[in-house]
Length: 389
Image (cartoon, rainbow, N blue to C red; front, side, top):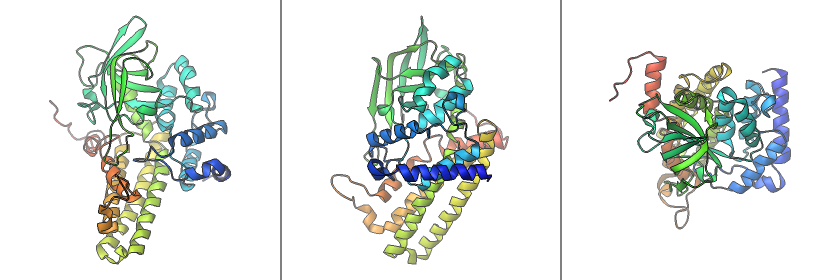
């Protein structure tokens, strides 16, 4: 790395050390998948504190409120943030998904309207993609929107919508061309959630928490200008958003994975499970897998540097998702019989139980393993497309 990147890394490290103190000290390690309920208001305050100091949206161009940080500097930020055990971010979807999408595809008016509130963490966003019959097969979307005068009227149902109950807006993939099928006739709409015609129902998960939601649109409205791209171009815009989701923050995720693995190894040493040669072998395989995750992430960044990751990003997704699920299984085997007992009444889980249960979803959300394999086969290897009805 260049000296400028190292200087930036030192600046990030120093700021986190100086600011994860006082009222924010207790937030270290709080939040994350399966634990989004932890200290949510305090984490929101923390992120607004970051915004005031210029540490949100650092990779965005300066004209849109970012720092214009290079790709290498963004990687350094996410790694240092994870190494500091700083709390899980609450504005990830707005900052890492919608913001870059608006910068790439939005109108000047849309950027002026929405980007400043994302930078300041004043408005939170969620992603309205999956439906009961259109999960990994997103092209089967049935939510529809009709243009009535100066407004789009949205009717349909979304599911597995992360943090919708905490969000102000949702970017929604809806069918705007009557009679259209599959990838055709879809549009990408920005819809306010605080209005009549929107109902949000949290889904209780295996972990006992509810970060996922069902969202029902029954004649919900948004201004006609709140469409990203032209009508019918929603699939292209939606795929670009998914590409941004595979961005530089994955290296910070990998640091978190390393911390989890190190804790599992320490537990195995402490309770004697490390004496089992099969457990030792699985821990060694997990360590090797972690290095592969990092290599995949670094390779994927070539696509990010070119604008957005290509279908090769699916290789990284399928690998880390499977690895993390297997780490949860390993953690339970290291815990032994004790892992079968709840930590407390009525359903209090310890960190290992929560890891095991929530990581079952890793191979499903953000594109299931099956869909990732199809993408790799068709778009990377050039194999014949899967037969679809």
